[in-house]
Amino acid sequence: MLELKNVKKSYDGTPVLTDISLNIEDGEIVSILGPSGCGKTTLLNLILGIVDSDGGQIIYNGEDITNVPMEKRGFNIVFQDYALFPNLNVYQNITYGLRNNPEISSKEEVEDLIHLLGLEEHLSKRIGQLSGGQKQRVALARTMVMKPKILLLDEPLSALDGVIKESIKDRIKTIAREYNLTTIIVTHDPEEALTLSNRVMIINEGQIAQFGRPEEIIQRPENGFVKKFILNQLEIKKNNIFTLFAGQLQEQAQVG
Ligand SMILES: Nc1ncnc2c1ncn2[C@@H]1O[C@H](COP(=O)(O)OP(=O)(O)OP(=O)(O)O)[C@@H](O)[C@H]1O
Image (tube, rainbow, N blue to C red; front, side):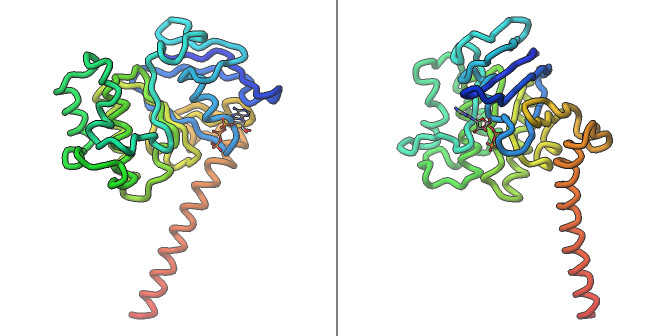
């Protein structure tokens, strides 16, 4: 279990996260959701260990890791821009981290991941020859071969469109389930957060506005911000779609 207790972070005297306390169970998919600039990436970086907190504690499986450096925490992140190596092919990208640590994953384990992420036919391609969704799958495979204790994903779907987005969502869910892997995802999109995660953490003004299961957030928003930020956005999306359908029906009726 990952636990944060009263974690705080300021940049140049300006508070970004004022008091964050939370528990995340093993194998859970949790989304961190909130408006631009609310501190989502900062929270992810604090957990990863590339940003130091100004106060509070980070505890993993009972051990205080607040001052443990990133490389010793054993968590791993897939960055928004994937950060793949353009001069290497897909297979070389996936196995890059194993060059100096080949014992971390066996050949069979690497093959299982390649299969799980549907990358068999792309292994000898260069990164520049791949679509956005394929790059995301390579980035996921490259991170997973290192067997992270926690998988962190920064806006994993934001560069992808419709069908591809759904397929990557399914793969993230499959990975979390098959490997019982705690997965923490930063997103600004309520629909994405609610459909992908076991629990959603909504951040506003440096604090957690609500942390609950998707159905709890939809049925019992705990405050005005959750209602306004989350439910309004979903309502607008829903209305847009209904308007579109209504327009189509009207057109069909006129043609008929
Ligand atoms: N290294 C830094 N130095 C100074 N200020 C920073 C630094 N990193 C982030 N900030 C500021 O902290 C606030 C939170 O940034 P953060 O990137 O965590 O937000 P976010 O919710 O991830 O935003 P977005 O959705 O736009 O990526 C912002 O006001 C940002 O300008």
